[in-house]
Image (cartoon, rainbow, N blue to C red; front, side):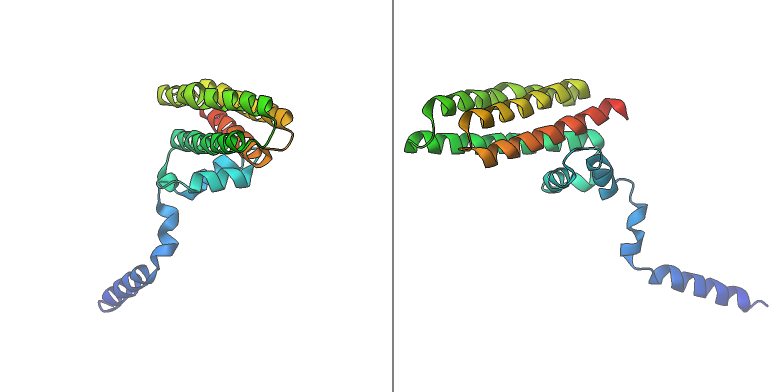
Length: 175
């Protein structure tokens, strides 16, 4: 009987050590399940997951961190839209008046709205960040209407990420 206890203990330790570390992933406090849970509450689930996972540290981010990531991704999309606007303006392609109008909208997003959203998130003001992102999505839609296709890809990108940022920020005060 005394030999069965060490044998049982040895068998238990052997099983415990044999479990691959990949099976232990569920023991992490904050893993990608928060990303999926958060993104499932947005209108563009795939856009959300792709945007958030594009940033290092996203797998261990809090909900507020995920909101900050979406605003950072939005900032990148706005910069790319501005680059495209400048290319079209300098080449003379596209309706000048509408491009100038969109440039103004995107510059406002970059210089005013995105910094406001970042500050709101730092204060823990999810509603403030949500409102800013909602405005950015609306301006991207307005720009698409004005330019009639010249910036479709960029406008859609900004709209979709802004809508995701809006939905993630909303979760900060509705969860």
